Amino acid sequence: MIEISDLAFRYADSDFRLSIDRLAVGKGHCAALIGPSGCGKTTLLHLVAAIIPSQSGEIRVNGHEVEKLNDAERRLFRVRDIGFVFQDFALLDYLNLLDNILHPYRINSGLRLSDEAKQRAQDLAESMGIADKLRRFVGHTSQGELQRAAVCRALVAEPAVILADEPTGNLDPPNKLEVIEILCGYARERQATLLVATHDLEILDAFDLVVDLRKLAG
Image 1 (tube, rainbow, N blue to C red):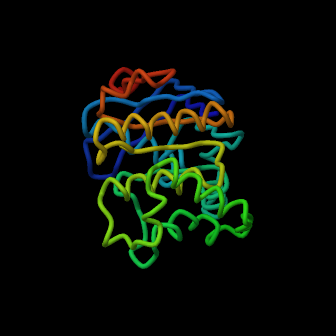
Image 2: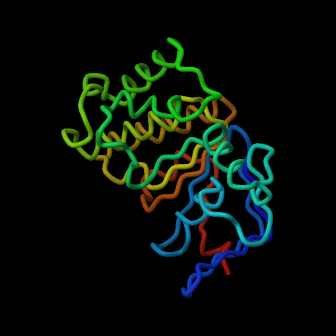
């Protein structure tokens, strides 16, 4: 679950401001975050994931009071609780797609790279239509395939919270709907929480909740 209250955030030497009185997304629910570029969608995802520390207010994610975590606790929280689909994918050039998908197991001592995890990676890749591309490296893979690999990586460790920043930005209409259905299906089946930042109005019907950030931000 994600619960935010009385949040206020600004970047130093910038006119940017983000303020949210209240936002809640429950377990098993899928929410889309909309609004124009620059309104704070990516910033909000990064605050929820503790990639950037909050400045005031409360952010509770899967039982953690994120604003109270120290640096080490934030890193552990991100690895254990969060599956993040970054807008720029954040895949590693020196790894093939399979190793990129399984990368959470390489950086978290609390995750064991079992045969079950490897099979889950294979199954996710199959569902995303990239099972035959897993030995390719990032530089030899299309943007759409990289996007789908990034989604697989976000889900492979079975996180309680999935945050996705424009996860359909490089996909054609049939594929983008399929990816959103997979993300929402995962959240509902596993009682996880999904928050997606998007400009794509064509996918909004798939979500339980659509949040216009302009109506939350001051």
